View 1 (cartoon, one colour):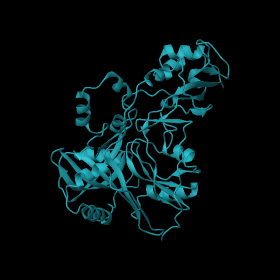
View 2 (cartoon, helix red, strand yellow):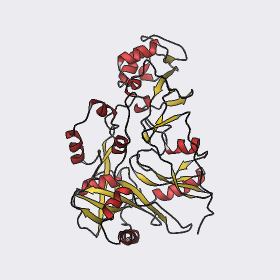
View 3 (tube, one colour):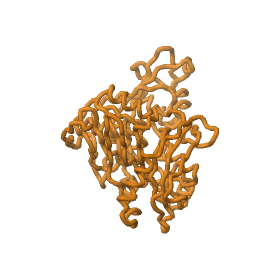
Amino acid sequence: MTHQVESYPQQTKRTDEYYFRNGLRCVKPYYSEFITHSKKRWLGRELLEIYTQEFPHYGKEYLTKAIEAGKLTVSDKTVTPNTKIQDNQKIAHKVHRHEPPVIDQPIKFLHVDKNVYVVEKPSGLPVHPCGRYKKNSITYILEHEYNLKDLFPIHRIDVHTSGVLIIARSKEYAQGVGAEMMSRSNSLKKIYFAKVTGEFKPMGEIVTARFKISSKDKRAGTWTASQDGTHDSCTFFYGLCYNKEQNTSLLLCRPITGRTHQIRVHLEALGYPIANDSLYNSSFVDKRKNQEVTEEEQIEQPSKRVKRDESENSEPVEEVSNSEPLFETDSLCNDCVKEKRVHTKEEVLRDGMIFLHAYNYLHNTEPVWEYKTDIPYWALEDLSTVSDYLELVEKSKQMLFDTPSPAIVEKS
């Protein structure tokens, strides 16, 4: 079954919200309010004491100045640092937001019909606003530069991962297809490319990884694989080729379940972590630490930089963006000082991507559909040394697709 294909949306860049430099899309700093309400544990305590304890990344000096400047208010009133919080009060924190830059590139459409937009997600660009990203996210850019409304991403894909991203055009369609993705139905199959450290063995054969996955560090967002974890998981791997000079192997991966960081965690457990994965490849991390890096570069690396918004706290916080983007500096904003540093495209690529790419999504029962990207450049670097590499990829992919899912694996 084929869907009626529509024309691909066209982009109009927003220079009122962004500036473009060195091949990067940079968000102009802007003000937002983070709003929360008084908690029971806050009652009778001073505002400065509460925020210094709950949000220590701001620092006591900044919080004192923010309160005195009226950027941290209680029930819409300017207060003093020693103001005591009472029940049913609204606390608003007006912050000057700086988002990390991302690579400036058009979002490539793979397919458009009445139900979905299918795009190729670039590395380093989150799917939707989260953490320090809001305007530098796929859904925000599609809405504001491609004039697309009612966007419902059907599945997760990590910020550092690239590849197929399916976005539903209605909540109902997202829930239907999304539910099937989470059900481990054998009719929906996914293939990823991955480049890993070491010589993958046995090369040219399917390797099954089955582990229990559980949280390792909630603050860092990392997971670990074992035989006694909390969530059952399974991935099939197929080794395509080995690069002796780089000591890396190129793999195809078919995740059967859909756990957070599943492919990355399974590869680490097998002893072949993704070659440039700063979360799960300890040798890569050690190599980066040993490299000569300037103090400014260390500050700007996303993995080391402290988040500066209340969303880091476990309590729910509502964010309200309430003014036009600003480009001038804010006297209380620590990030304004760092913004003077010019980012490079190479640096953002280095810190914003890993060698993991969602290559092919196939649904082989009605309605039948298949979405596929080009082979990523970093995979072609290795495949170009292999004769008939396109045939190798297609045959290997089909072998993975044809392998039945283990019956004992629990639903994702």
